[in-house]
Length: 128
Image (tube, rainbow, N blue to C red; front, side):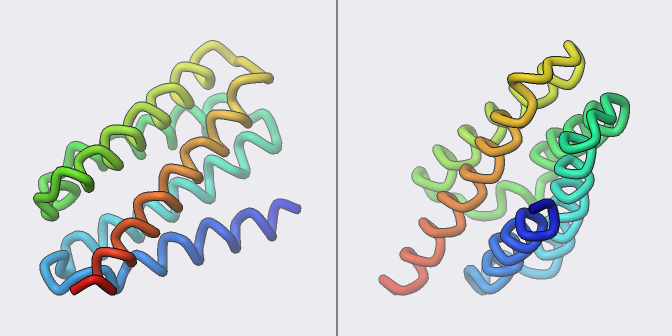
């Protein structure tokens, strides 16, 4: 199950690499880092490794403050980005509180926010 989830997250993040010409190599590198942290978060959720969960969720949140994160200046992208940040913050709080119930749900929400944003960007690319 963990491998299947990691594969899904990897595909979602990789799918987003070809989003727009404006994104460039800086955002691609950022998305690669996001994927690494997402994989480590899944591992930490499954094994209840609270230190790793807190560390990687904090790092994921830190990535959202990187200037490359907001290279796409669309209102709808901003809404998706804000929803992702809120999901990551919820995950980080759950990790800090060692909350066995909230942390897996929060991880799923983080993943769903990735999927929704990448779907939006793919639709926007197709519309062009």
